[in-house]
Structure formats: C-alpha cells, structure tokens
Length: 321
Image (cartoon, rainbow, N blue to C red):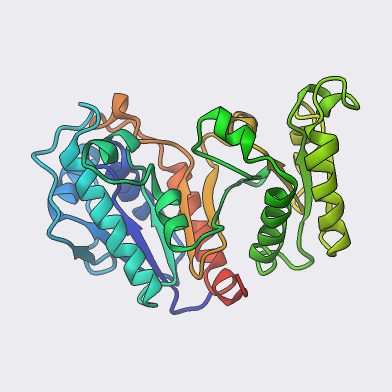
C-alpha cells in the first residue's frame, strides 16, 4: 500500500447497520495506519451512530465530505424508506465521482437497501448495477481467506440468469475476469467454472448447456491463454476451491455462488467489484434492519473490506482493466 492511499467510505442506508459498522471498523486498532480516509454521508448520521455505539470518531483523521442529501429523522430498524434510499444513493454517487476524478484511490461502500432505492425512484438495483452502467463488464466477486468467487450474473431473476449462460457471454466474462485480477496476485489465479445443471449435465442426460455453451466457452478461453477448468458439478466445485489462495470459483448465478460463500465467510467476507479503474469493496451483508440501532452489529466484514481496499489500492488501479 502506498503511503498516500486515499480511501473513500460511504455510510450506506441510514436506517440500517451501515453507519454503525463503519464507525466500529474505523475505531479498531488494526485499521490500515498509512491510509487516508474520507467519509461520504451526513453529520447527523455519524452522530446517531456514535450515540448507538458509544464510540467517538476522530473527525481530523476521518473528515466528512458532506452532501446536501439528508435522510429524514433517524429511524433505525424501521425498514426501507424513500428518504434514506435517496440519501444513500447520492452519497454513493458523489463518492464514485470522486473515484473517477482521482480524488480517492479506493471506495468502500456500506450496505444499502434495494427496496429503498426503488422507493426513491433510483433505477439501479444496487451498487454493482450502477457501476456497470458506467463501466460495462464490471464483475461482482466475493473474497475471503478460505474462498473466492466470481459471478457470471448477479441480481437477476433466475430465468434471466439462465438465459445469460451462453458461449459468447461466458468467454467475454472469463477474459474480463482474467484481466481484472491480473494485478491482484503475483502469478495470477486459476478459474474453476461451475456447471449449470445437476452433475454438470451428466453428459447431456440432465441438460445440454455444459456441452453446447459452457464447455466450448472454457475451451475458447484456454486457447486464449486463460487458466481455467470445468465445467464441474456445482455441488463440488466450491469445495475444490476451498483453501486454495490461487483459485477463484466461477458461479453462473447469484445464489449458486453466494450460498457456498456465506457458509464459510459470512462474518468476514468482502464483496469486490472488479473491472473498474479504481478499487471498490463492501461488506458481504445487507442493511440488517432487524438489529439496527441496537449496538449489535458485527464490524468484521466492513473492517475486512477496508483492509482489502487498502491492500489493492495502487494494484488494481494500475491494471489495464
């Protein structure tokens, strides 16, 4: 990590646990010491999180870039509201603008509510969809010490996710993934691709997607020099990637990958968007309205998101992706 690494952090949905886990993560002793930080949100939200947690944020070390977007009076735990959805999007939008302009090297985003964004008239389902609108081909991935996963598709209804499994689409994805992670780890990664059907189609008896789409895409990628194997039965591919730091499992739909990932890294996993000209990470959990405002939120995933952002800053930004 460079000594001048600048990390922006958004506060997320003010009614959820985002502000609380940001505050708790930023007051931990193991915070990256050499990084500089800028918060994107509103002072009233930080003050409410301080009341909830009993902690006090050092405003000199963690300055606030305050926007005009202010959520209505705090109501932690009451569920999604249009006001909080609009504010969380504006904070995120401002932070992305700063990253695109080079004012920050990495962006860490606290959880937002898809429902609150929809109530506020925001046309994107979440962070990744907005980033995809600016950087087509952006990839949703999940990282932990034990397991790493990249998703061919993410927030799509299942029937649309299935339709996205094509030879051309999977090849483009594998090419983008290989390019995006080239700077992350010396020596790169091997990709293990999951099949779509039970037993990866059982030689066509349980479906032909592996024969007609997935297998040919993998062969095309291998011919292009990408380290990739598969398709493997979906019920074993994640076990094959477990505990192997040089392997990324490729899931073909959101829950195919996230069920496995959250079984082994729910508390410490990190969501990372690949293929951007800057680093973007996030905790792998949601707004958790059920415990918001009760000082029960675990900051481990947010702390890992900050650590990974600091580690990657200056690496992914130097990648051709």
